[in-house]
Amino acid sequence: MSLIEWRKEFETGIADVDHEHRELVDLINELHEALCMDADRDTISNFLGEVFARISAHFALEETVMRKHRYDEYEAHKAEHEKLLDDIRDIMDALEESDSADYKSTLSTTIRDWFVNHFKNKDARLHRLLGV
Image 1 (spheres, one colour):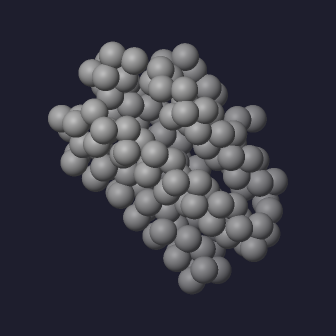
Image 2: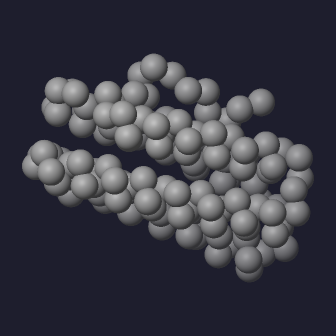
C-alpha cells in the first residue's frame, strides 16, 4: 500500500517541479514499503540517504524558481524545506544510534504529513501566484 497517493491538487503547473514531486512520492512510497516489509537497518539507512539527497536537490530547484520570480513567501517556504531536511537528519541519526524500531512509524508519518500538507498549501500557493 502506498504511503502517499498522487493527486492532481499536488501539481504546481511547473513541469520540472511536478516531475520531481512525482519521483519523490514514488521514492517515499518505496521507502514506506521497505519499512512495512521490515527491511534491515542498512537498507532503510540507504533509502534515507537517497531520499535526503533527492529532496535536497529538489528543494534547490524549487528555491531557484522562487528566487527567479521574486516569490513573496520565499523565506517561509525555504524555512519549511530546511525543517523537513532537519527532521530527516534527526531520524537518520536516531536510526544509527538506536536499537529500537520506533523510527519506522515516525519516519512514515513525518514524511507523509509534511509532503501532503506542503504540496497542498505551500506549493499550491506558489503555483497560484506564479500563474503557471
